[in-house]
Image (cartoon, rainbow, N blue to C red):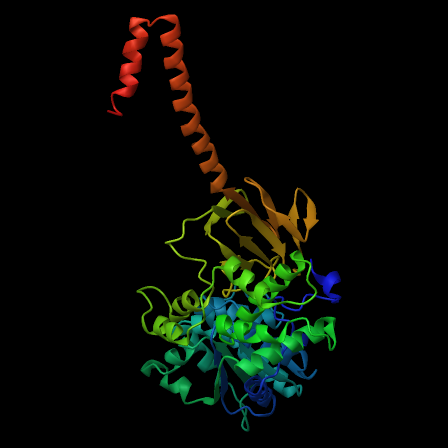
Length: 448
């Protein structure tokens, strides 16, 4: 990797939500202050929304790192669940084993726990990330939980964080009672061009760059044009550009490196209008967040671009997912914001990435806890060959290179006619056998 050439102590643009890399723009600082207010006020929910990749999860992790010791926290990230699953997940966070409980028992256990914590002088906080995926029934269960109170105050503090469609859900008539309990509601906007530059320089400084300028001053405008101030897209582009500078043996990222990275990722300039259009025109069965992600994310997942291979996700000898690989980058991880989600406790939030180009495919570890393994060896970066099996937690990623299959097909189509032509020539030299002539005619007839 490029750590040594750039004299950095760690990767500056990892996609994992590391609190020490949090760049507190004015709006991020305000959102964090709203989260902190839940510790002191119990009169309602706090709702934080933001576009995909705007830094909500990193903000939550930073907030949790500073939570006082007398606060008991339940953090829920898997939100495509039934009401019973949700209640069980909350109790698991509080140390219970609730899987044989009926719903009435789940609610009674939670209520009793909340009252006990209040009596012991402890505060209880529930944080739900990716809350836009919660069903109306689960949101209603959360509202009911928020109603647990003493004679003086509510017992449970609640933060809901999610993509913009969470706001649309909360505005639905059937959730009016819940919406009336929302005390603070804040939407994270994308970074400005100046904030984008500050964000990049902040992450480089934390990674060990100090006051060294590792990005040429004229690169920031280009980065903003392609990323639109979305932190996750900035990370992806800057990481790829640093790899480009490293391979070109440059100690500073230039505009040429940005252009090279954009070409590798197959990106177009970021357009908020396109993003808004995706929200308004989500296809049937597709959430606004999914449509927005297709618009904001690099233009790597497009049906018009033929796939260069497939990634098979297997568990216990059975294929559970098949993902086409096109030029660009796929992120594999535990949470729903990944391109390939593997819901397993052995998988990190953002575990690894697969970078596909016209000529190669590479898998890279994203500083995951359990790593990635090829042939029993833990690897940081590995060029994939057709049939390679990468162990990720308890799952296997099997790489199928369609280019190899096409090459074999091309070899066949070139070899067979050549062999037939050679056979024809041999017949002319040695004298034609009548049966061979008929066979040749049978082969050539369909072509005519």
